[in-house]
Image (cartoon, rainbow, N blue to C red):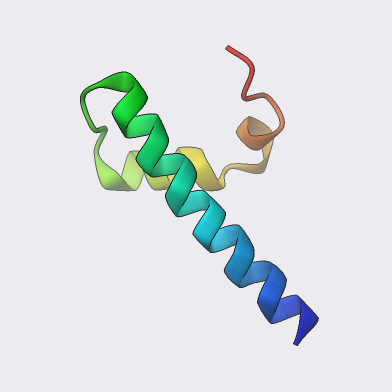
Length: 49
């Protein structure tokens, strides 16, 4: 159950990050590209732009 909760939390956090990121940019990126960006472990560690 802990694993499922962690996955669900990560999914919800990803949605929030995607939503805020699209607002920050001002023009929403294509969903597949944004989803791949938000779920890419390498980029999650290097969010500092």
